Length: 183
Image (cartoon, rainbow, N blue to C red; front, top):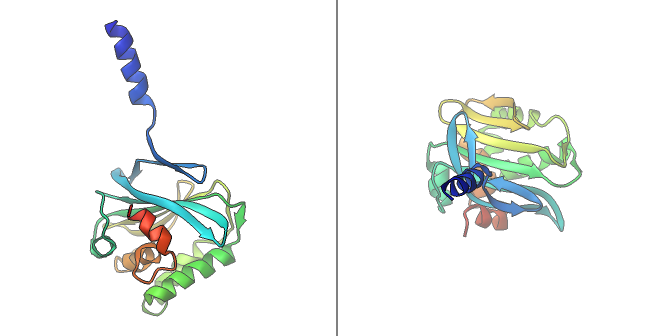
């Protein structure tokens, strides 16, 4: 009997636990970035009209429902985007980034950084692609596609501009912001 219980426990503990299945995509409870565990804070869908574009998760060192605190901290943060739409052309991605950056004032303040960020999106995002937008204090803002680092913007002040796209007061994505903050 003890062996059976031990086997059952081993099997249960070896099954990956997923916090949420959204848009047909399973988002993990924990995202390990550069040997640092970040926990899923909240998740939602990015929609354009009625089209589901990507499932999105916000990962932090510990859960937090205050966008102001999250944006002002110098802690690691990650946004995971699992694309569920067939194909989003790079021009549309860059237009969406620029709309978000314009709302934060980053297009003027961080012109060099936003241009470098946009240049990392040089091909369409296809269904099944996973993009992680990550900030690590010792590294900067990284764009990772399907586990491959596409590039890094070292300016730590750029962190707030990037993550304000989803979490800022003037975000174009207020419903997604609520979902990411788990409100």
